[in-house]
Image (cartoon, rainbow, N blue to C red; front, top):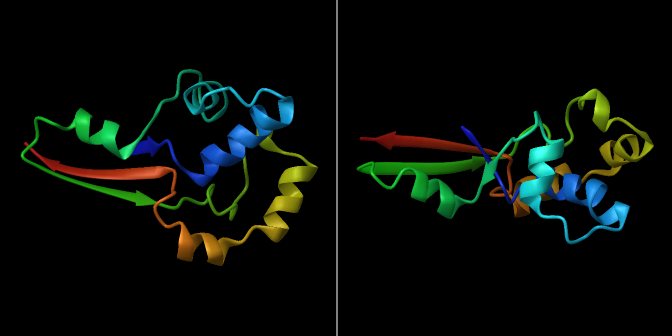
Length: 113
C-alpha cells in the first residue's frame, strides 16, 4: 500500500492547510509531506505508481476509500476541531462511495516480478 495523491483526505488537507490559510498554490506534495502522517510522507498518482513498478511483469492497482476519506473514525490529535466535527455530521459518505470510489487514500498494489 502507498498513499494516493488524488484522495478525499488530500482534498480535505489541502482545504485546511492551503485554501483556508490563503495559500491555494501549496501543492498536494507539500501538504502530504507536512500534514498527513510523519514529516516527508509521500503520495503517488496511479501513473507514478505504474512507473514505480515498471520492471514488474504484472501490476494491478486498486484505490480504496479509507476511514479518513469517509470521515468514519477518529482523526489524529492535530486534526481535531469544530470544523471536523461538523464535517463528520454532514459528510456525504454514500455519495462519495457511489460517485468517487477511485478517490481513496489507499492505493493497493499487487505485482509479479
